[in-house]
Length: 189
Image 1: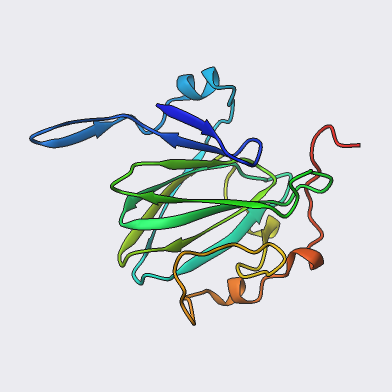
Image 2: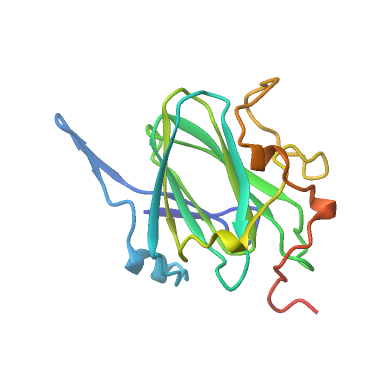
């Protein structure tokens, strides 16, 4: 598995090796041992799978606050999506910055999003499935969100859609400047 550090410390881009033949391919998409060797000790406790029927669907930017903060290991099961992580750790030198990568069935890439980052995605094709592991269980009382189109964050979403498909919660999420983030960067003074 190829593991690359992104511009945000702790956010990793993973590309599993695929072994193909006339039947298709095989890929090991998760290995606790491989991640531990790369310095990632995250224990995942829940898998989630969602389907977005329309291209241009935006889900996020979401997080769970401590004591139920979640790290996520995200991959695309079918179709293609643009996956984003935003640093929301107060006192972080990269606070409010984002990284985004295309994850697709074809490229097999995955994004590891640690605790302290808001996560979201935009579907690039119809019928896109996202599959992700979480390091804590869903706890609705700790849910938080950040506005997907916050100009101060400035995410460069790949599809220019006048009206993306959104949930009501995502359409009403707060801006970064109004967010009282529950995260503080470890070791920050």
